[in-house]
View (cartoon, rainbow, N blue to C red):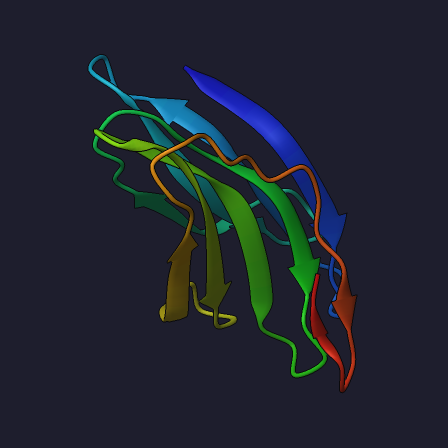
Length: 116
């Protein structure tokens, strides 16, 4: 089962979609790229130990994609930020949180200033 959380139109008229994908055991973060006709260009699933979902996606100034989401582990819920290139390869990812529950609610990319 797929749950879509966010979708954007890119500067190249493609569409990037993110959300959660239930595989029968746990939820994982998924990212999907479609062309302007709706054809799938690529899809990626990022495994989570318990629960994961992409919450928001934005296009970075360099044309790559920034995804923010939630990823649970045995210690609680953390915010995960992922940068993917235009081919869906992970450029970097960062997990932020402590032993409590943190959740992402949105994302803003400011050219030359950062990700908020």
